[in-house]
Length: 369
Ligand SMILES: *Cc1c(COP(=O)(O)O)cnc(C)c1O
Image: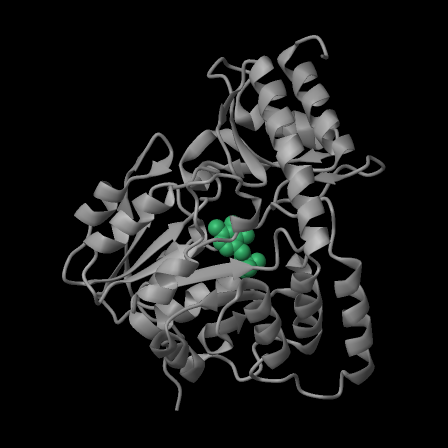
């Protein structure tokens, strides 16, 4: 039997704007500096690469569905109970699983005004309603988030530090946020950039997720550990939440190469320290040089900077993007994040950082410094 009807996704799916990853193409023959996806210029630990190469010998075997070696390596590195750790195919997968497990149609999930776009996608995909809390000076505002809470709220997503702003909430503010939430609301602390933060008043959320029944911290191997291509992330959460997500995840959601590489990477502290030192040095240098070009830069504690362009015609983010791309420097437009006249710049290699500053100086008609 046939009828004219066509398959249709469930309500809400076609309202979702597909995620657009950072660009990665430069004109032919020009060296490419990809500064658009917050990837590390340091690359992965050589130990991670070796471990992965060893794992390649047995591609015919299914991976360990519990990712035991990886969970134990993470637990050891951070002093955690492995039973409270769940690994994901990137931390993105875990954010999606939280939405699938905790949002019924009509339930609400809060994220902040310039928060990571992935939250909106997963909230809607689960049939939930995204609720946007305004920010103050491109920073999450605890009172604004709390004022969005209703009986239907199930999840609050806080990227700390946030992407693409690079701003963060001190830990006492995160505690104040948690204290103001009803017990049934899960606070998701997305700490993808935690390792880069060099501030005494910052905390990724381990203490809070240990103490409270409704706090989850997510982390990733994609940024400081340089394993973005393998897709591996983890979450630290109360056992009841780990249990709920374990019931709905794919049985082999982390592949064997990712398990091996991740476990080796997290044990290579010296590699992480090198990456942090490089970032701290060049974050400060780039902030200073860009400000010297009269570009406004949102103060960042991550591995990227939000750079605001002049309102003057001809000198905006769109023109800067075209000029930089032509010369091999790929930054990220952030119009979808509510910043039509800014771009996000990932801290790169010394060569890339010096090159992007010189190219921006040319673009703005300033002498090179
Ligand atoms: C990069 C990033 C992640 C990490 O995503 P993966 O899926 O682990 O690669 C998570 N949250 C934010 C805010 C990010 O910028």
